[in-house]
Length: 556
Image (cartoon, one colour):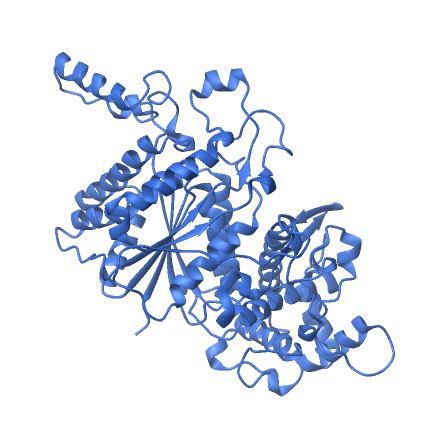
């Protein structure tokens, strides 16, 4: 029996790593799997958190319209094949009595002497004027010595409230409880991957304590019937070191916010974290694999360059663009989930080097991300989703104002005497377009909005799997891009039909004829609803069009 899969994404960076993983699922990299996902943050309004949760909702809306089957069912050999179940938990620091550590630590009913002793003890570890008084609702701001304690107790507190029941139990407590019960019910064969960074605030605070916190919380919720055993419930995580920077805050913001993370210290934070993970017995006992992911200091992106005003500490404005290393982190989760056997030994460190050209630029292939066994499949599945995006967004205009590419394609096929998908509604077509816009791009009022894969390419100094034209930032170029000619390696591009005309025209005519062919009709394993059949037909036609496809068995 396959192991049950769980993901926990913590903090802004963890959310962006999860975002990359969701797009891998959309490309079909997790066939026939159901994945339980928990997001954890100190800031419910965090823009990166909101963005990935909205992405998962879009993904699930494509899977099914049936409210009784939220997220649909897992499928295989198609886009959106994994089933994703989302649970959310965040620490509530909104009230006056919880806004900072000083208020949280204020224990009522004690004598003055005991209160003074508590205050003295706190000051041994946490600076009184800064660390104890900065607002917690935007995260722990690289104060991991404080954050680890607070995130641990937040999880324990939620478990106590959920167990007790009553009016104080919030939806976030119930969702954490449900996630933990699922974990407990699958304790004999569970794999849990934690996304987060080690150089910042919330993620760096949470990774060391999450396995223990979940085990203790489950002990509370289950009334002592806790089945989590670190030899059976296997945890892994990214050790994602610093890869971006931001400008220093001015004196006014420092005075107001008390504590703001300084990106100049991120490298030092990363070094300290590495030393801690290597030496801490709890971490080494609770994690099976730690995936070390780094980025050259000379190539860091400054997330403040396009912003005005002070440093964004959190809230809805914290919607940082996506980065190449987050895709590497998502691929680390894929590696962990697809490994045949996991050792019972203590934590092992893993890394993968990336090939460079003679000019010291990156040369990326599928193997760079997922190794030689899955490398070709990675290239073809991710490329298939990019081809689908350009088919519907570029060739049929779905990226541009006032058009729905999926519906334009549906109507074009009907004109070619293929009415099979006329029952696909305009609303269903728009759902697919909307998701592909987040993956690829959109153009609104002439303004180009790069989606996830375009943002990823923008952080790569070197050769990616796909052509520069297919990931251009110029709408005029994209309007005429060839959906079947996206690969740098021409062996994987679509075969073109014979005759006169451009390669693009001959490829598209051959492809649209292929969509009508009986050999690309979907199987029951690929889905049974009209949306699933439509998506699977396009998947089959695209993969059958690829010159050297490893996908869909006989559809090669």
